[in-house]
Length: 267
Ligand code: ADP
Ligand code: MG
Image (cartoon, rainbow, N blue to C red; front, side, top):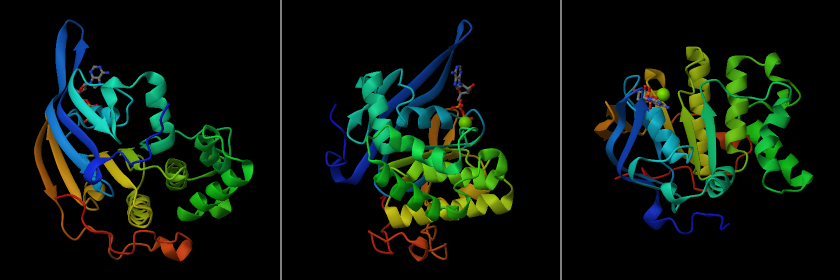
């Protein structure tokens, strides 16, 4: 299939949803998890879906990530209409352009950190030398170059989530989706992984979208979209959350492509 490379993304809009509805059948009743959600995200955003448990955050993130499809309405992600993609097309879009970070890290336990990060690259048909360079870079970005040979059982929760971040960004996707990434981390590790992601957002230009109800995460968001009972209750920019005073990844090997100042990308 055609691989989206972002060139067909109009005006920097990488995601748009139009009156997105997602209903679930629970027994005989119907539960409406998303109610006409219309949103746009631009390239390079650092945005979060926030709101209480059950408000629809994961459901929306899953549709954006092409893991689920809407009951009605439409979602366009990186130029592709999610509800029109075949499973194979959706898998291809994900494997090339979308990185996922989960609450439970989801590392493969029998593989080393290196092998876990390399895993998404095996689907892309790169040479082993190309893979080695990318995996080494990604582990350096998250500060774990020296733990490449450790297995998940030998890593702390914070280190495991850093491996998961490296795995999400190793293919340099347009988009990273993180669902409650700090839920299993203490405060110190939560701040560390947020700082790492802020740096990757700034230095790689990757768009990050979070689903979270963790105040520690919310503080870092540049844009905060609050869902209440499946609807967008508010959508605000949090000025000052532009990555200032955060770890400069350029100092550990990322050459900044976008310059140090990325403009606030939403309007
Ligand atoms: P959040 O991530 O904000 O906690 P979710 O998106 O997981 O919320 O869930 C929103 C609502 O949809 C909840 O009421 C939840 O129980 C329901 N829901 C989510 N997934 C399913 C499913 N697969 N089947 C039935 N109900 C679901
Ligand atoms: Mg959730």
